[in-house]
Image 1 (spheres, rainbow, N blue to C red):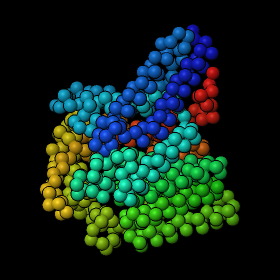
Image 2: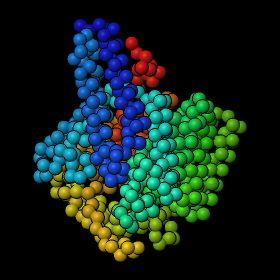
Image 3: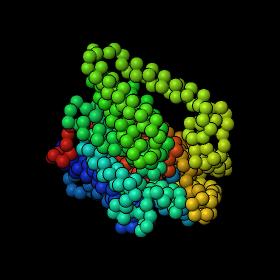
Length: 499
């Protein structure tokens, strides 16, 4: 039988290995762009993710094989079985796919079976051997700050590190090339998912922290909000707003947390107002954001004069519900004739056009038709491009060139899951998110678990409109697994010092 000393050594080695992997993926992976910049950023990040994750998982598998280093068998929990079921369904979908030859790596986006199984390995390994720690938030904040500083330089017309091909800049977006690219992530829609994670975690740690020196995290949060607003990705703004509305009644249970939440809100709103300098917002909107920041700071000052309010979480829940209803009422009566609010107003009135949401409505309708044809196992991992068979053509006014774009993504992570792997796999994915959310609620009085859950919540909502690529999905999965770790997992024991 293994001795207690050997067991402790094995557990400590696995924790140290996992700790190093998480730091690598939160600090280095988001900044890695390869040698060709945006021209090959997807394959560069995929190779980085696959090599790093494969080496880490191999190390975890080899540890129990070493002499006198066998740890006791861990108790299998619901989250483990859900993740295992998802991996099994992905394998079965690949075997039964009519596009079997394209399922291993995927048809162009490197989102095939290999990537899916690596995702499952990340979720299981992090949940088994890690716990939420401040240094993970610091690593994510540091990488997001560097990414945002590079994006800000690009928004002034510069090309730091030669990420754009020679002669191209950010302002050539949708004119000389399709889409828009910023920072070290690339596509602005994918960047929005990363910023939702980063801003959510930074604000969450500050709100839940009892240390004043954690105020530095508001700097990266402000930068993230600024770049998100300047990139004009509505899905990112929706994700942050939803994270705030859902997270408020979960995180805010004391007047001290309420005060810090007001300060965090002011920082995010000031960041959004600062995007006016890059012509992403109207002057009226910038002034509105500044006014909102001033209100948040005034509310924070008022919290210093108030006693500990009773049933604060119930009050925050009521305010969140009221904010949602007010937003829907505003959209219902919106008088405009274009823009996101106009499209939302039309949807609330029962009118939907394929062009809404940058043609997402049309893509989603096509996805639903494909899902109806293969509802149980989907078309196979990474085969969305082969199933959708959609193209959009647009003549560029500035150049007169007719550009045709082929749709190779569902532009909705959950629809994409059902399209590729089938409805049972989507049900398993939603069940895992629900289980993680339940643990988030149970750990709402802790210091770090609710903070990481705030980033997960914001990104999960953004995923309703996002691409879900391997450029940022590993970051989200690590945060999700940290949120779903058992509630009795200590965050005070440092794995670097475990004997």
